[in-house]
Image (cartoon, rainbow, N blue to C red):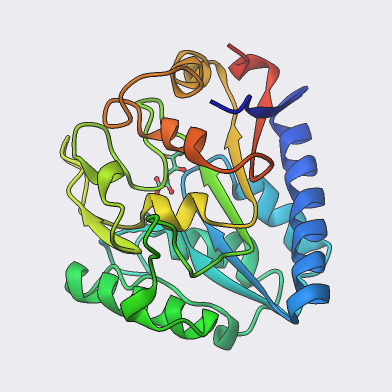
Length: 246
Ligand code: 6PG
C-alpha cells in the first residue's frame, strides 16, 4: 500500500483555501497541456465553501464541470448536488450551461447513468466499448475530482454494504444506499482513481474515526473510501483539518 498523501490544515477555512489553490493549479495545468480541464464535483456540505471561494476568484473558462455523484431528485431540490454547485459555483462564477454536465437525477436512474457514461466518453474522445482497459483502468480521464467522505466511510455515492465499490467494469452506476436515502447515480472506482488528480476533503471530529478506517487496510465494501488506496502514487491528496486528524 502506497503511503497516503495527507495535508493537515488548521480548520475548514484553511482546507477551503488549499482546495481552491489546488483547483486553480490543476485546472490551469490541464488547460495548458490539453486545452481543456474536466473537473468532477461532489455534493455534501464540506466542499461548498471551496466552491464559493473558487467562484469569487473567477472560474477558468476552459474548464468543463461534471459531477462525481447525484441524488435522484429534481435539480431544483435542496438535496440536489447540481443545485448546490449551481448556487455556490456556477452562478457566482458565471459559468455558462454549455460547460456544465449534470447527472440527471430526475430521470430513470439507469438511463441517466448510461447517458452520463456516454457523455464522458464523448468528451474524452474514447470509444465506449473500450472505455475500461484490460487492467480495469478507465481510459476516460478526468483532470480533477473533488471528493468527500461520509461518516459511514462512503465516498461519491459508493455506500458501505451495497457492493457498489466493486463495480469496476462500468464508468457510472446506480446505487440504492438504503437508510431512507434516495437512489444515487455515481462515478465508479475506475473513474475516481483513474483521474489525474483527486482531492478528498475531510473536516470535523465526526470524520476522525472513519478517516482512520479509510487509511487502514480492510474491506472496501465496509469502508468504500479505502478505494483511494488503489490509486497510483501522487494522484490522491487528502485535505483534512486538525479535528479530523486520526
Ligand atoms: C453526496 C456526496 C458525498 C459526500 C459525503 C460527505 O452527494 O452526499 O457527494 O459523497 O461527499 O457524503 O458529505 P459531507 O461533506 O456533507 O460530510
